[in-house]
Image (cartoon, rainbow, N blue to C red; front, top):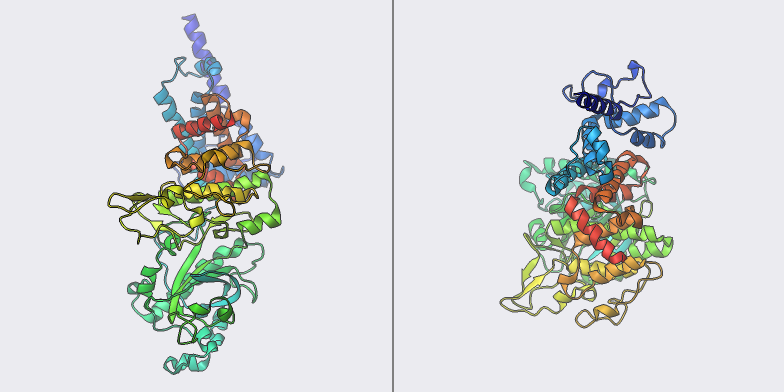
Length: 592
């Protein structure tokens, strides 16, 4: 009885000591944050108690000044998640190493080993909680609405700047939205009063508003006036408001000469000049707009519209064949075409690397962003099929990388296996970086083009350019159908040996021998956020390290760059015990 009473006393004292509240630094009751407690059932009127490990809060406070106001602000940020954090604390005890079982027994937990299923289940619950908290506390673009319809606009809503780039299918111009007064003054009185008397002069074609084209979603509006008003407000809000984060932008409507948008003008050679036909024929270009929700590493599209092809000063020099035949004797284009409004990015991958000479860590961050984009597309049953450095755009101020130009993309749910009965079926756009299984596939009644790991192979080939090496398949003598896996060139000196081994595995000719996109991405993340010593820890010890790293990200998110925060959020959100263990084991094999 005496021993039982002593044990009970020890358990109660231990629990009281471990869960004792950390005294708030804003102790006076007048600092209680009643306005935060929107749900009275979740947050009572009792004094604020912080029952998570005090060291977490101390490390969190060290990044802020001694001002009470700073503490109050940071603690108010955590209050809505207090219950979840305390639950994570409780579950962390079950992830403790074997040497801590005596301490766990004093806290009232069993000395018996946890079953493997129960242990993994508890760990999965804990990391899911952390992922949910990271999702709630990360600044995700609030302007994106997955169910919002993208209505048409007019070229008159924008002022076009310099030509950013062109190809055989499109030209891209920098652009900005006009103010209402600019738009009104831009239209000549004759054009406003009588559009039927328009001539096809260069100035009129560039400035007039297309009043006869059909909307992509015209049935949702009762009148043309309602459509025009809704279109202008929607496009102006979506395109200009999102850009205010850029340090060079000081207002929603930018001064003349400052362009925060890019407009992609597609070339229309044989499609009827109406919105429905153009949208159907060019639907691949609109995949990020139609089939995907917002992702930080996929090009941001705001809207699309159909309008008359403008005869600009560069047209005769750079894309003369795309000019409508009614405007040029040498042109083969149609009168109307599709325009896509996008965010403007500063540089391509090759330009960014040449100008900035990034470090090994920064190059790895760029490559991780590409893999995150490919993983996101694969989960939406999309394959890009035209990966190259010109289609990887980077914001120079933040280092954010996005995947662009979906003209050759394929959306094929529920998998990415396409029947290949005849050679009339297009395999994709970039032959130089086309996966071996796609290049060598021959048409037949039972033949399939399997794109499951095609983009992964192309990203492996592109990794050479990430580390300033010539692409062996684009600039070298390697051919997809005949190269030897063991003769792939080295990525040194800028890439580590582990990266080189992973890339060579991604470039295996047999797709079954390659890792999945998810596995490759997880390995890159582990190399970014964990040191080699942590990766060699036992399973339980590595799980603890992983949890503390995730919590550190949660508490220190304000000092992380937007790129690192987005990458960590994407990584921590999708993990479970099995995927984490598989990635750790796979990476350890590469390290050995």
